Length: 186
Image (cartoon, rainbow, N blue to C red; front, side, top):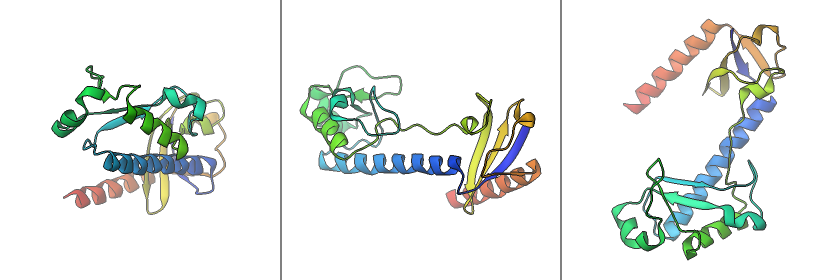
């Protein structure tokens, strides 16, 4: 069963989603600054570690933090000796854990309270008794639109802050949103 909603800014899902966006933006700003200060050219990177989710690592977790990049030619000149030889499935090469740059990165993540493992809230978690669903989501004119597909949705109470709308309204707003974004790209 499909249902569509406009999510109120006061809802827990909306707040959690925007907290997640803030964590990603903070992480991105930190990476840009760190890369500039350390002459890393790559724009493609991965960071992570075994540890806390959606909160900063503590000093005792520092050794779990890693940084990987898809190195540019200049990055290879500058960092070949401290990058692992083997690429991951995304083409990234990790900085060796014991190199000074990796240690500096981990320390600055701790000092700046950077969330290493930011995970997006799952919309299904805001409904009772739904453990998974297909969904689509977009934000347009300061409104968050969500369409959810799950066979149990018809018998479940709508969470606080979720205002149900007709599927046709969702699809018409999605068309407008997509058209405006397409126009902006051109």
